[in-house]
Amino acid sequence: MKKIIIAIDGYSSTGKSTIAKRLAKALDYVYVDTGAMYRAVTLFALKEGFFGEKVDDASSLIEHLPNIQLKFVRDAKLGTCDMYLNDENVEKDIRTLTVARKVSQVAAIKEVREKLVHLQQQMGIEKGIVMDGRDIGTVVFPDAELKIFMTASPETRATRRYKELLDRGDKVTYEEVLKNIEKRDLIDSTRSVSPLRRANDAIEFDNSDMGLEEQFERIFSFAQRVI
Ligand code: C5P
Image (cartoon, rainbow, N blue to C red; front, top):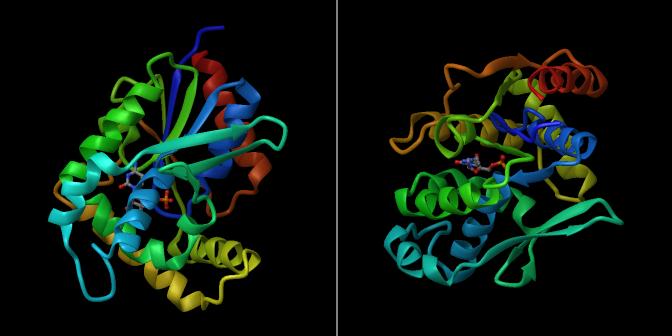
């Protein structure tokens, strides 16, 4: 069986990571959540006071980029893959609405993208990888053998993310979550560096009215056709 690169891009909270993780497990591939990397850089910027309610100091963040070390730590037994920022497990901290509110601004910084895209390309050198994000099929791996572009209505996506945050114990309202999703989509798709868009050769996949099982079956069959 040949090893390929599977790129899953799309709007916020379309369920990319759930499908990508499952696909990687079924194929015995590595899964990489690139959103977690942008979130970790954002957490760093918030902690250092470079980005916050009042300050947006991109130049300080750019200057400190070499001090940011990111790695994924996989636990095969637990089946988890946690994001580490400078040797600290930040998996939980990067999923908050506070980080979500700033991440698209941080992800629009050219130097941040250059650093993360380089790291992502290194991770895919040996193929056998499922990577999800916004620019995987267009910028990180334009030659990926399989590209999926996930979409779903903003309301469907907000409902999913709202439930996720509530389950995690975050005190948020549905309206806040919907607003955040719409704002991130707007920034992500209109930024000048690698805007979110469907690669010409990506399969558009609207999962608004689809359960997890059906999504997985369909995407798995796309992969089988290529492998
Ligand atoms: O996938 P997730 O929603 O966790 O991504 C968080 C944010 O990171 C996105 O809204 C986007 O601004 C940014 N991102 C990006 N490019 C990627 C992955 C994520 O710009 N490849």
